[in-house]
Image 1 (cartoon, rainbow, N blue to C red):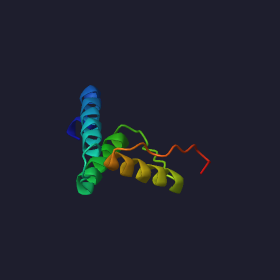
Image 2: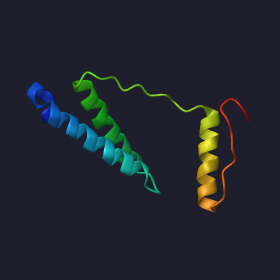
Image 3: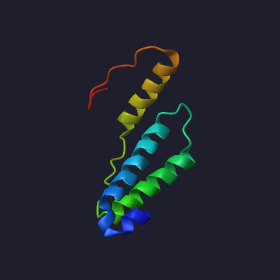
Image 4: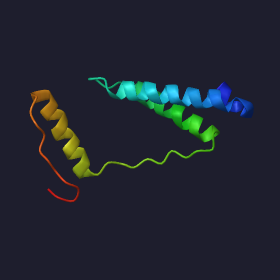
Length: 90
């Protein structure tokens, strides 16, 4: 965050942001999610984006998307193919 406070240090700020996003992506790929760590990484990234004057626009998953994700996770666990669903169709 120190690099972000110095306008002349923008390249280092972008590097720090990229490193945090890479760490978040790695944390999301773990079999067991550490929600405390994910929350801390999200807060850090949101703070960095705020300092850079960027807005983090989140889109929440629909119930259908959540169901599809759960089916996919179950299929991965069982090593089968998940059901195919298209947006707006059941």
